[in-house]
Image 1: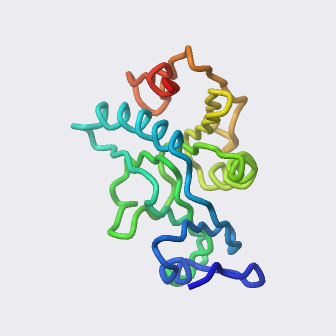
Image 2: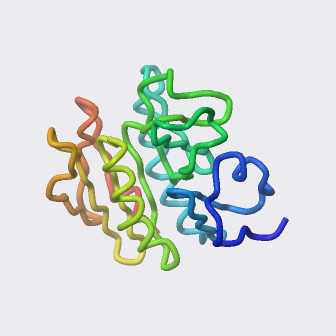
Length: 191
């Protein structure tokens, strides 16, 4: 199947019918296709994910990696197939197991990490930022490999992300949704 056209509104039903080798996300019914991420993207994802995995090993929250679909319903769909937003974040942490099913996650994860590339930076910093804020993702990280920076947004009581915290490769990030988890960026940007 070829890439979808941009002329219509797409749903989760369309997403389910695309070939597995195509990395496609749908945001508000619009299609965003992605190229295969570079090797360094995988290294960063693994380094961050490893630290989350070790911490969460015996806890109720779980960490998942891309290509796990996250469906973000608007609330007026009659079935899952009508959902118009399905994204595949690089890393998600989910603490509410009722959001998990065989297809992935339905509803906002507690934490999302997106690793940017030149082709995804605008989507991660604008489209997904607004999307994750709207759906109540408590903590959103944007990792920029080219400059070795991590920007962390925390959801405030007013439902908006507050002023971001920016970290460099020499820093450690205290994960706000957990009491005692710290991610060491020296291990993440060790390339």
